[in-house]
Image (cartoon, rainbow, N blue to C red):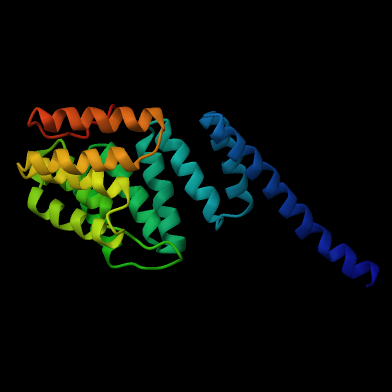
Amino acid sequence: MTARSQTSRRPSSSRQNKRVIPIRGALTYLDEKSYTKAIDDLTRVLQLDPRDELAWQHRALAYRDLKKYPQAIADFTELIKLTQAGDGYNDRARTYAMAGQYQPAVSDYEQVKGLARGAVPTRSKPLAWLLATCPDPAFRDGARAVEQATAECEKSSWRNWNYLDTLAAAEAEAGNYDDAVCYEQEAIDLAGKDAQRQKHLKERLALYQDRKPFRDEVER
């Protein structure tokens, strides 16, 4: 290899290092819940490479954790432009819902149903959850939520606690509280020992036992 060819490779290697170091730092900051520092590092990455999907995704999630929903939505939109993948639509839909913008959330969840790109299959669970638990009654539809959540439970052979939890919420919204109690108990049995998860599931179980639906109120 000539000296010239070696020299020509150095800028790309340097550029790659400048990208990798802040990415690693950002992921560490995210684990530590130091979201502002993570955003600073990820912004540096995007200045070097505006097509870095990982950086758009993680910066959007950091903004969302800081409840900076417009910035998170904007970053998820850039991610969708790059990937056209269901995960981006799911994440943006969840962010819209957290911001109280339920119509665009429903639209994004509907968009997911037509996508099947990548190794991770898109699922209708988030839409079923919104239809069952939305604080705005205009967007709730218990019957449709039951239909979609049941389909996901069938696909997972009734062994996925998350889908069973969604089905329980859907049955409660539809007024079928005995079924809601049954499915929520199954979700609890399958959900493992994570204390925070068990706490939330048992709180929902208590609601259904009292014949009350669950509302996914987001603190804004």
